[in-house]
Structures are given as C-alpha cells and as structure tokens.
Image (cartoon, rainbow, N blue to C red; front, side, top):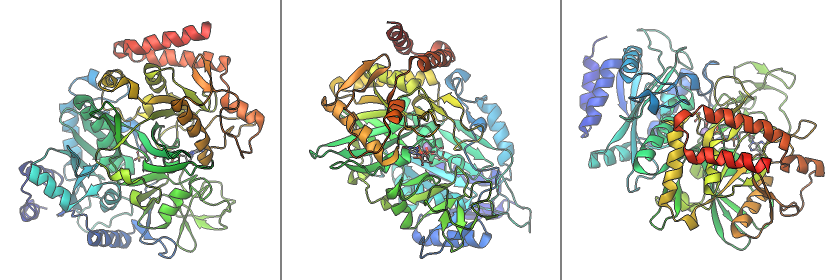
Length: 609
Ligand code: GTP
Ligand code: SPV
Ligand code: MN
C-alpha cells in the first residue's frame, strides 16, 4: 500500500492551521491508514459511525423502547481497565517524573513509539477529532486534537468532550496551541483480513511528554487509555500546565448544595477511581430541605478568582461512570440520565429484551442474561454478569439535577474540599482538618483499597495523594508543593475548609458501617454546619470529628454499634497508620515539602500527648 491515497485525503481536508495540517500528514505517513476522516461532531456523523460499528459487531444496538439511541460494546477480556504499569511520564529529566510515575528517556521512548505506530493503522480509517476541554468561551480554552483509528473512541469522545467542526474553527481562528494526542488500537489489518469486534494489542503504551504537552496511546481501546481528553489530557498533561500556569487539575467531583435557609455552597471531592465520586456528584439528599445539584463527577480544574476565591470548572461533557452499584435505590439521578438514552455501555450484561443490566442495578436479579463476555448467565453463575469495571458513557446534560453553573466559564466558588478513600478500617466517617496546611497533609496521605478501575490486584491499601496517584504528570513532591504555594494566591479567609471522609469502613460483621449514598447528605450537612460554625465537634489528634448529637441522624435506621464503628478514632489502628505514612513519606526523598514533614511531626506529637 502506497502513501498516495493518504496524501490526497490530507489535501482535500487541509486545515488552515499549519501545525495541525503538518501533524496530521506526518501521522498519516507513519501509521498508513486507508483513509482520513475529519470528525465534525454532527449528529448525522454519529449516526453513521454507530451504524457502522453495529455492522462491524463492535456495538450492539439496545432496544430503543428501553434505552433510546444507546449501544453496548464488549471489549477484549484483556482490555478492561487503565493500565498503570504501562503508563509513562517522559519528562526530559527523570527527576521531574518523580517516584510515582514510570519514566523513560524521551528520545528512547520516541524511537519505540515510532516503531509501534509505523503502519499501525493499515486497513483502517484514521479519524481526526478536534476537541476542547471545558467551555469554548473560556478565557484560555484548552484545545486538543485526538487522532485515532477507533470509531468507538470517536463516538465516546463525542459524549465526553466538546468535539468537531466548531472547535476546529476556533483552533484555526486563533491559530491556537493544541495538545496532539495520538491513539491507535495497534491492530493493523492486512488486505482482505476480517476485523475483530474489539481490536487491540497485547502490548500497551500510554505515554505523555509533559514538556511538549503531547500524548501517545497504543494498544488499548478502553476509556481511560483511549479517550485521551480525559485522564491523559485533563489530568496528566493539565496538571503540568496547571503547575506552570498557577492553577490545579484534580480528580474531583463538583457538587452544589442548597441549605434549607436557601444558602448555596459548592463542594469538591477527590476520591480514587471507583471510590464514589459519580455517586456523590449525583447525590439525592435524604434529609429534608437540602438540595443537591451537580457540576461534575470526575475532573475539576480550579484557579483563584480575582477576589482570592477558589473557583472550579468541569472540563468534561459526559459521565464515564462505573456501572455496578449504580441503581434506582443508590443513584436514581444517574439512572434517570441513562434512561434518556444516547449512551454507550461497555462490558455490561444484556437482558433478553435488549436492555442492559449490571450488579446492583435492580434489587431483583434477572433470571437470564448474556454476560459481558457473551455467555449465557443465570443467578447461579459463578462470575459477575457485568465486568466490575463496566461503564456507562452518558452526556452530562441529561442529568436533571445539573447545575446551570456547569455552563459558566468562570466556574463556581468552592467552600469545602473533601478527600476520601475506600478504607475498611482506621479512617472515620468524617474528620475536619485543623487548617489548610493540615488539610493538604490529609490529601497527601490519602489511602484507599485498589479497585477494578485499573488492572492489577483489587483491595490492596495504597497511598493515593489527592486521589491523583495515577494522574500526577510530574514529581509528586513538587505537586504537593504546588498545592501549598498556590494557596498564597488566595484570600486566606476565603480558603475552603478541608475534610477527610470514608464511606467504606466496616463493622464487626464485615458489612459497611455507614449506609452511604443518599445518606452521605448527613455528612455534607455537618460539613456545611462546620463551615458556618454551628455544628459541634470533638478535637482529636487527627482533626475534628462530629460531637455526639451533631450529626443529623433523624429518620436514619442505623445500629448504634455501626455508628460507633463508622465514627471512632482508634489509637491502635492509627499506630499502624502512622507507620504507613512514615513509609510513604520516605519515598518522596528530598522532594517532600518541609511543611508536610512538619505536619507529620505535629500529628505524632498530638498522639503522644
Ligand atoms: P471513577 O469513575 O473510576 O473515577 O470512580 P468514582 O469515584 O466516580 O466511583 P463511583 O461513584 O462510580 O463508585 C464506585 C463504586 O462505589 C460503585 O460500585 C458504587 O456503587 C460504590 N459506592 C459509591 N458511593 C458509595 C457509598 O456511599 N457507599 C458504598 N458502600 N458504596 C458506594
Ligand atoms: C478512573 O479510572 O478514574 C475513571 C475511569 O474515571 S477512566 O476514564 O477509564 O480512567
Ligand atoms: Mn476517575
């Protein structure tokens, strides 16, 4: 196959942005696709691509009476999650990637990537997707262009980001900088070779060059590895931009709360992958008089406003949520958004009437399903019907409780920052930090049991600073220092209060000590009342915890022993926790900010006092 047809297509679709035109030509010459298609983002194009994916067997069209305009995809069983071990930050200096990232010398990595991408799109269409993360009318919109050989990626990107012709025009008009993000499933087709439903490669490379702000992803079609606007751009590359430009790119939800007194508050929360962000973001409060609206469920870009207030925007346009556990009783707002259709499900189970199902969707388990691997499934089957990391991909504007401020390029002022993890022991339901510096310490020592969102062991406790362990695009110590230094830009009196939460502590019989989900509104109420100075708290070595009677438990049916299990600060548990923190901080070496080691010393001193 020669290059001539490719060149022809490039010339036809030539953009007036020279950098983009030459990058597209360069990628085409390397990857050798059959055709190039510039993605315009239209509904017609989406219909055409989904039709084609259905014909190819990648997508299954769902029963439109149950899920209008919705599809299910089933991945290769070896391509179901992010691959942290295959993810690299290739900064010029190894030191700048830090101990939390895999690193390789950039020219060495480029040589490997050149070899991997050479001819990798043979027999396929190369799609060019202009996109913007966050509002197009932002002061400094963050543009990207993803090149991919996967139509599944194109259709998913259309849900997750603002893509297409209008964005391309904006890039051209400004001759704007864009993050080049190259993706290939790494499965070239020989002439006449029949494609598989989910092409991918055994070998995966998810690579970031932070100084040139570029992304290369090879071998996987799974969300976090392939929808490059999301984790690769909006967290890893954006965290580096944020360091250089004085803002924050965080793995956080954004939630608006209105009190019975009609006062508005905004809360952001950083929980590791599959630890409850989407659920808290779409909270349905169980306590009377409180209202919740969402602004975002996964990624939050924050900067200080002109009055020293911390402001947040969500750069995404969709939800890429964990399906299992999402049900009408636990998360009715997500279910209602999904029920409107226009969604792509990945690795869920199919019902016999052409709908989808996953563990926890309904209390009643269907008598028969087709599981995510295409096998007949009954409640007696020994494996889950849906993969534990199965996902729904749904436009965020289908969420009824979406705050109108989601669309505001200025974002919203933040009153509270929550850090949280999935811990069976040790970490109480809620703890208020003593002050800002102590709050950053809480974030820096955040820990959680690993989940199915990344490949590898599940249920192992690991430190996950600010829930950003897999997403910090530079040295982790520098990242903590950036949090500390940046706050000097803010009005100190307006800095958000910081809290540590844990919905996942277990009782003595191994069950969840706290009911969670909508009942988490009770914890949010206490948090707001702490900000207002009206809720009582007890000072402990680790911070302020609810005083007896200060947490609103009206109408909640929870055993006193469970409550105690959820709330207690246990000195023995903390003894091993302190040892864990010691070990964690040692790994930072010289790059641990002095402020953080001072916080650890004070914590130890408070325990010995
Ligand atoms: P990512 O999209 O991977 O970043 O995850 P996330 O943080 O948005 O997690 P999500 O809200 O999707 O929750 C992951 C899992 O935790 C789901 O199975 C939920 O049902 C479960 N979960 C969420 N909130 C709670 C809670 O308050 N209590 C309990 N017990 N489980 C919860
Ligand atoms: C996560 O793993 O934190 C996710 C899903 O939000 S993914 O976008 O696939 O990374
Ligand atoms: Mn996430």
